[in-house]
Length: 321
Image 1: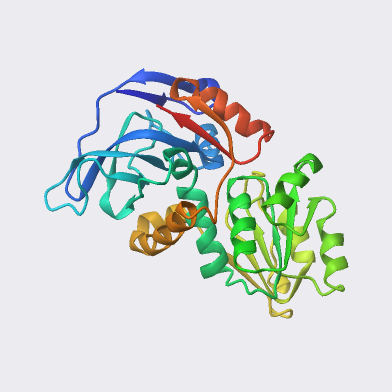
Image 2: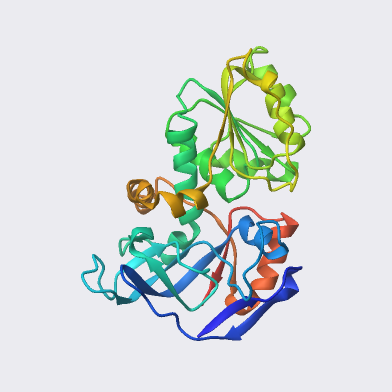
């Protein structure tokens, strides 16, 4: 089968279109023929070496949409089932194996393109909004990187939940209309969001802030987080660490919550199934959708990575097979 193999850390040119063997499945695993896989910013970080040591050669990719072609004995799945999954050992490949606990059926009425766009960003966003942030309709919330995959999903889910005051931040103001169409009330840059938050909250600050950027953005977020507010930290796309002091939280009764979908997949995978069921239905009923920025053939994975790194896109970037 064809796959994208990486044998060293580096720029997008380290991605090699190669021929490798189809993986063999073990107990409680499925073999899936991939239709599409999404490109996530975590793939970029892993490629360049910002997510720990590399066990080379490796295959990038977090999630996939496709059709089951082989199952283990007593499997709850059948050959021919259409599914989304978080596979073992990467998803930039024509066939992947996955633990049954991380495989979820999708209806025939949901396209593979939309299905491939959703697994990581929609399941993560739903958990961030409802389980970690526990957002209420009356809250004023800030969603950083609102034009990205997770940001796009968080804005839509917040709007669907009836949140009235949704502030989205973007790196470039030319993404303002896109984020407003998703449901944000106000869109501003990282340079101006603190001022905007205080303006619309009568200097009280935001109740919940979702931060996947870190660095200076985290520090600025704490500057405009309300008393009893929550900063939800779930990434560091800036590549920087934010400075957090105990005085940032105890006297103001504020809290900082961290969350990782990768950690949850590894240590508590059963937590994902009920969330996956909810977001699949929301996508199938078209209450949620994700714009597809561009679709690349698997062999052009390097070009897909370069587009992600340019940040000059809106929505999700996919690889097709």
